[in-house]
Every structure is written in structure tokens, then in C-alpha cells.
Length: 111
Length: 118
Image (tube, rainbow over all chains, first blue to last red; front, side, top):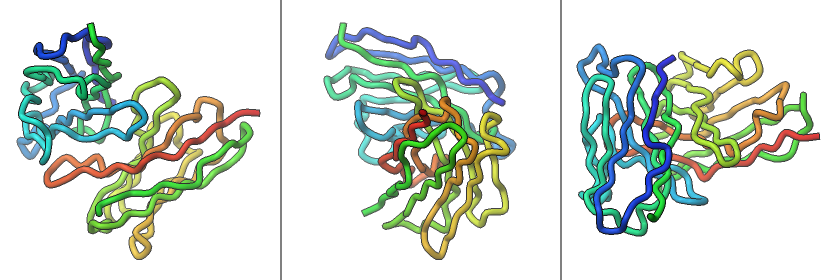
């Protein structure tokens, strides 16, 4: 089983300032087809999760461009360039290279 | 409109059974691999089970192996999760989801709540 470790688990943020979440995997997420299957999800209170990013850095349709994903191998990052009020919720990484497993989640909170 | 709608959750005693259903619409359900994901109260997301598009491959997380069975009926655009020998630690919201790794979209249901308690 691939273990996904997010940090921090809680992130105090200031509206208008950047935020960054780290996600590390216990083994490389490069698939035999050469693609790295790492997704990021956003979950607002009382809602189902929503995919923001797939394949490390590709944004889903309708996702604001203040969200960006980066990384390779076992080390990945989700960045929000300027946090808005609607971004204050929980974020999860998920690997899809070795079946599926999620990180523990990172909760953004207003500082 | 693309959607997944779960049903079948409820309150059940330890050792009991429930069958969850998830109906897809607005997309080509039969071409999507599908999963069940759960979320215990106040906790994170946990992948539970996977089924390939034509049911040839079934996978389970270790804690539900031998107790849960995933299945699908593509003619009815429906995904199922048969849950037997339920335990308190199975309590949570159960989502059906595609957990898609490629474009154009990933689809989640609204969730159905399972509570295992005496």
C-alpha cells in the first residue's frame, strides 16, 4: 500500500496571501506508462470532494488559475497564489498509480 | 447534468448488513471505473473499493475484505456495495466516485450516511 503524507495538517492563512501544501508518497508515483497519477481534491464543509488537479499539474475545467500543482516522483505541492475566502476548507492529495490512496487532508484556516 | 446519486444508508446494529446503491446519469457510466470512498465523522477520505468498467477487476481495502462486495449493473447505470458484518468503525459517509485520473472529469455522489451502533 502506498502511504500519502500531507503537511501541514492545519494551515493558518491570510486572505490575499499565498498558501502551499505538501504531499509525499512512500514510493514513486511514476506509472509504467510514464505518467504520474497524482490528484488534488478540495472539500468544502458539507460538500462532496471536488477534483482540482490531475496528473500533478493539470487543472480541471472551471478551477481558478490561482491553484497550481507541481512536483515529481514522491514529492508534490499544491499552491494557492492568493487565498480567497472560498478556498478556506480541506484539501486532499490522492495517488492513482498504485490503485488509490489519499493523504490525511490539510485544513486551511483563517489566521 | 452529470451526477451520481447514492442511497441505502441508515442505522444498523453491529454485525448487520446494508446494501448501498449509486445511480449515474448524464455520462457514459459503463465506460468509467468506479469506487467507493468513505469518510468517518470528522476524519479524512478513505478509499474502500474499486471495480473496473466491466467488473473484471475488484479491489478492496484490507479492513473490509471478506465483508464488503462491490458490483455494478451497467444496463442500469448502477454501482452497488454490499456491506456485511458491519462494525462501529464502518460508520461514516459513503461516496461513490470515479476517482478519474484523466480528463475530462471526475464525478462524485453526494454521499449516503451509514451508522453502525447498538
